[in-house]
Length: 110
Image (cartoon, rainbow, N blue to C red):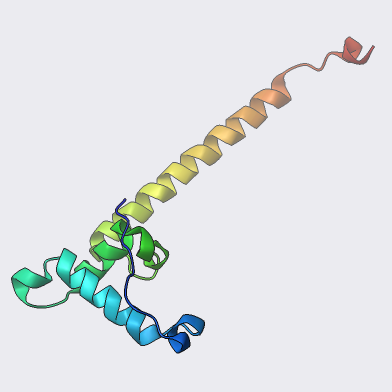
């Protein structure tokens, strides 16, 4: 994971109060410089999401700026998770049934 530093000069006012406009400006500038923005001469959503994923400073934005995926791919992922969940539940039920079938040793407590 890449570590990016937020640098610059601070006045007394800025040190006591975070400035969201400066933060957004820095995020946009960093994403533009480290993404494909220079090639296209534009800042894209994928540049922002890549920055949130790869830069430690912006890691907290990863849930807010996730990478885009197609709806069809997302539905396949959900279906796969559902099938895996059903398999796990079936395995747990099989284990419970096996436990019920085993005889209980009455002398185990003595």
